[in-house]
Image (cartoon, rainbow, N blue to C red; front, side):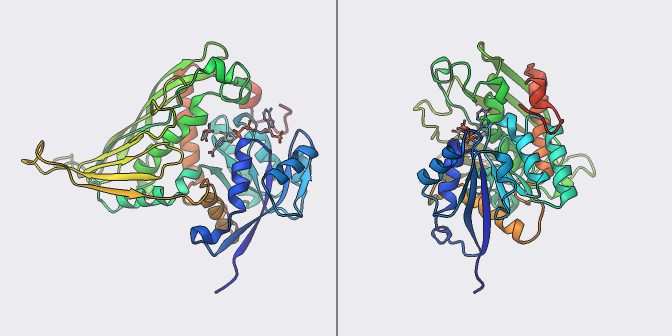
Length: 397
Ligand SMILES: NC(=O)C1=CN([C@@H]2O[C@H](COP(=O)(O)OP(=O)(O)OC[C@H]3O[C@@H](n4cnc5c(N)ncnc54)[C@H](OP(=O)(O)O)[C@@H]3O)[C@@H](O)[C@H]2O)C=CC1
Ligand SMILES: O=C1OC[C@@H](O)[C@H](O)[C@H]1O
C-alpha cells in the first residue's frame, strides 16, 4: 500500500469555524476509513496578532512546529504551506482569497464564496490562469450522507424529482444575540441569513436537482424571493426563495411534447433568523429537507448543514393510498468529529492529482448559486457597501 499524500495547510483567521476545521484536520483519517491523504497544519495567521495565532494553535492542540503569524500577508509567503483555508467573514473572502492565489497558494474558501457572483468569477479566472486549486467550502456536500442521497436520486429511485423544500433557520432574539455589530447581521461583513444560512438551503436544492444531472443538462434556475431586512442594520433576517429549475432528474411525464425528455422542478429554499427550522432551537427538525419525486420522498433531518439521518418513504401505488403504513427505509450516518475533514480530504486529493477544481463543488455551480443569491438580494433590495462588493484588489476593508 502506498503512503498517504500529505496536505500542508495554512489557516487564515482564528475565529469559530477555523477552530472547528483545525480540530477536524488533526483527527487521524483512519477513524473515517481514509488512508490515501493526511493533513498537517503548517501555519496559522491572525490579523489580530501573532500571539492570538499562537494561542489558537495551543487551544486546537496542533502538534509542535506550526508557524504563528500576525498577518495574512506573512502566511501566504510560507513555503511550507500548499493550501490555505480562508475562514474570515463573507465580506473578506474576495480580498483574502485573491491574496492567497496571487502568492501561488491553493485555496479552500469558506461559504458563502464571495459577496456576489462577479467576485466569484474573478477568483475563478485567477485560479485558472495560475493553475491553482480553488473551492468554496460547502462541507455538507462531502458528507457520505450527501453522496448517498445524490446517488439514490441518480439511480432513479425517486423517479422524476419535482420538488425540494429545504429550510435552514435559527430562531433567535436577534436584538439580544447579535445587536448591531455581530457578523451575522453586520452589513459591513456581508451579514444576513441568506449568505450565512440560506446557502445551505440552496445547497440542498442544487445538489439534488442540479448536480444530479449530467453537466450538459444542467440549466440555471429562475428565482422569486421575499426578504425582510433587520430594522437595526438592513441585513436580511428572513429570506424565502422559490427557485424553478428548467430541467430536473428523472423522466418527463408521459405525454410531454416531442423532444422534451426532461421536466422542471420547484425548489423552496427558506432561511430565517427569527424562527427556527425546529422550535426546540437545536435545528434537528425531522425533516428539514424534503426531496419529492414520483416514486417517493427523501426526508433529511436537520440541521441542513450537518445532517446525520435521512429516510426514503416509498410512494404508495394507486389503490393503496390512505391505507396502512408506508414503506420506510431509515439511514443513519455517524460523523466521527465535526465533519469538515471530508471536504479537506477532497482538497487533498485534488491538489495531489493536479486538479484545479472539485467535481463535488465545481466552479460553475458556485457561480450559478452566487447568481441566484445576487438576484434574491436584488429582488429584496439588500445591497452591501460598495467596498465589499468591489472587484478591486488589493483593497483595504
Ligand atoms: N462551515 C461551517 O459550518 C461554518 C462556516 N462559517 C463561515 O466561516 C466564516 C467565518 O465565520 P466564523 O468563524 O463564525 O466567524 P468569526 O467571527 O468567529 O471569525 C472570523 C475571523 O475572521 C477574522 N477577521 C478578519 N477581519 C475581520 C473583521 N473585519 N471582522 C471580523 N473578523 C475578521 C478574525 O480572525 P483573526 O483576528 O485571527 O484574523 C475572526 O476571528 C464565514 O464565512 C462563515 O459563513 C461559519 C460557521 C460555520
Ligand atoms: O455555516 C454555518 O453553519 C453553522 C452555523 O452555526 C453558522 O452560523 C453558519 O455560518
